[in-house]
Image (tube, rainbow, N blue to C red; front, side):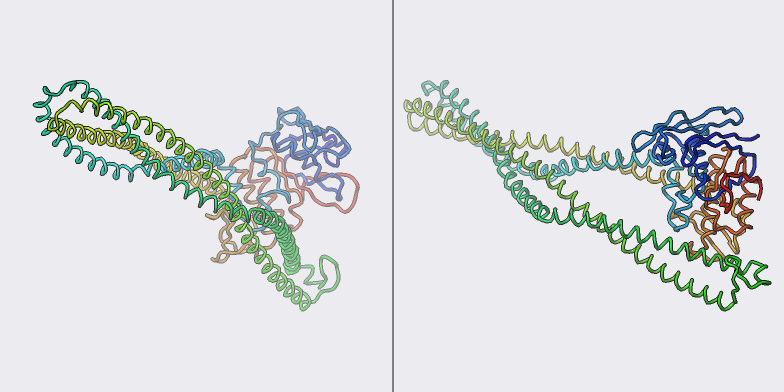
Length: 601
């Protein structure tokens, strides 16, 4: 069954109708006639809205809207695109659903898999997309790690309570012992007091006044104990604030300089990335030339004619060998420059990360300073309020003492001595009770903080376990995809013409690894066509695993470096060994002004 496609105002095509037959479809035309436009039309039928809208180049420059209509099996529908600012507005759903895996279907120079494989880079981001780890990574970074950081911040505050509990318990023990001693002394005095009590006029009034006075003294002792703790904490916070402000001042002195350095680094990184791209292109061109020499060796006609099969001019073995030696020397030099560039980029990226850390530290210090200022304000307010309260209560105590003194004037000296001894003991015991009350309140607070710290620690440990579980899960998911790909890659590459290859696989670093003659082969030592083929092999492996029934696969402008034998083998594999019904290949034609579709090679 044919797949009939109508194209209107897409890329360089105003209006075109094509029909794809099952099997191979070679789209031939000179440059700028519309080969890539047809590929873009197929992408329009496939890409999800969020990807398609980012390709305004798919629409004809002179048009505001375009369409692709397809008639195939149960499909008889079209999809339209309209100009919408710098993006596209899309009308209609994908006619062919790739489930977000369209990069497996279009082998073109912009394809990420092919691009990264040619460079010998990791294809981990691609593997991650297929392993669906995005949600896990988002969960880890935005929920788990953020929760752990917040829990640790609270834990650090509450963890201090553990040391405070020990010192407070020790102080409570000392005060309790001192109070116990005073209570024993008061028992003895009380015996004498009770015996003399009947002789004291207005003893009931004196007891009431003493009780009120002692209650106030207990409150004063409690307030002074709290004031002591606040006064002790305040200079520590002020010292911490001073240090942080000094650090912030130092940071701010360099902030503009650091920001300028960051901006300059960004430009330098961009420049070096461009140099890296140029050097890689130079290597690719050298590889292409070396590949041409390899073809000359394999070309039987050259053995007879001694002519270059590219330009037709005579070429001797010495000329060919000299050329090859020159190309290999040049390649080593360019490769060395590329390595230096990559090292420089790594160095600059590391510095850029350090700069970002410095800028982040400024924000963290500002946050710490704000919190410290707030706590200092709370302490100063508390100290001021407690001081006023103490002064008022001490004045009331003096008034009670004066009233008691007036009543004591009527008492004989011997009885008065016992009464005053009891009063002093009552005052001291009241002060001890006030101290104990404040210390016990602090202990209760610290104990609650300790409980919270224990709970927080358990939560941190649990969330850390969750974090590790998610990390392991992410690795398992990525390895699962990697292993699936490797099984498929093994099937695909075994039928292709890779000279002396023992194996091709995605390694633990998610790079394409080639073993040739028992040794690991660096990808930059492979020819461009071999590296392109490896990228296509990975794509085919992915398509067979995830989109086995998808109807078409496109090879656009990536076969120019292929020798005919390898090209035929890979096409035969796609047509004969996969479920792909329509294989589309674009090919340059030096003649004609129209698009032609050839059904065989």
